[in-house]
Length: 436
Image 1 (spheres, rainbow, N blue to C red):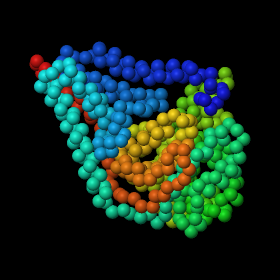
Image 2: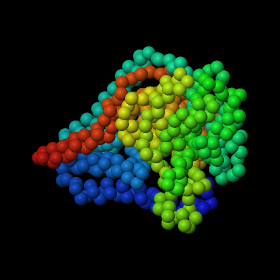
Image 3: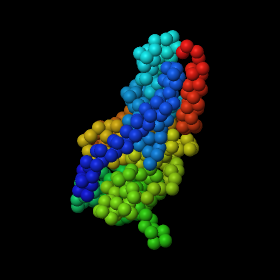
Image 4: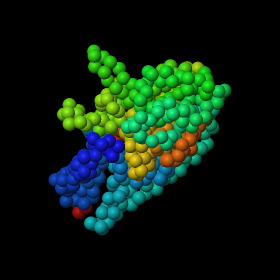
């Protein structure tokens, strides 16, 4: 909100009301636990973990969802342990983490054999997860690399957000992106540029700038870029944040319209009311973006390229278990504009979600960002290549390792539902034990 004068007066309100709204979920954990808690300590332990885990899931789902800073992200740097999310998903492991970090309470509140045993079981489970992850990594490393007959070049740029609010020349932005991309006429390459990087040029008008590409791009090239698009139906014009694919002549080959939009950033809640007092969405100068209908796998078969892509735009990478129904695709491409976070820790937090999605899906994640971090993340969460925050450059993917679809990619958050039933069973079981 610091980028738009119209929103600056709301900053004090957001500092109060947004944290207050998020605090409701933590307050509900305490309230519901007090209402339903048992006299049996171990039963209450599982009840607390269950309530906390379910409300974390609710927080990540309602009102467009905000699955940011779940407890599970405490393990972001422990990739071997994180491998377990390929089986039980982020919310499933989040439930386990809540229990793990709460389990010392069993030793403090009641030092009995059952409580000590439960605490030890969670510690041993963590060690087992680590062993599983190490074996999973070892098996992955043994897989023979397969070669693409082309390369995918992922771009990281550091272009100022001033282009949204000042008369920044779009031509200079395109020239900068082409220079960073360093195309070679005879190298078959798919270039991936960030989200919304040229806001003043609609998706169907990029072809008007073909002369900028002519000397650098050839029939060996395709371009993926985040663009704004618009369609008119029955006199009503709708705008979309799009993931657009062009051939070397800048003909549109395919397009995906973003489904999960950011409140206030891409659409203004209660726009009919708030719009009358001068408020609007931050990322364009006309009206709120509309949400796309569905996310389909994009099949590239043009110009001897053969690739199946799951497109994700910016914020969509943070959602677990809702990204796809069909796991028959080659890789995930995520394009992002992280400049809205400024110099905060936001870009780093946003990037970490990409690692979780790679492990969950068992797919490579290619991330292109402006004012953020670009990376190639393999299916076990290892960052194979990256361009760091604040830097411009590119990284190339030209080989990959194939692995079987993960259990989570097949069943999604149904596994979390099974874990909920397991916890309910444990709550009732420990509640029946005498002298617990």
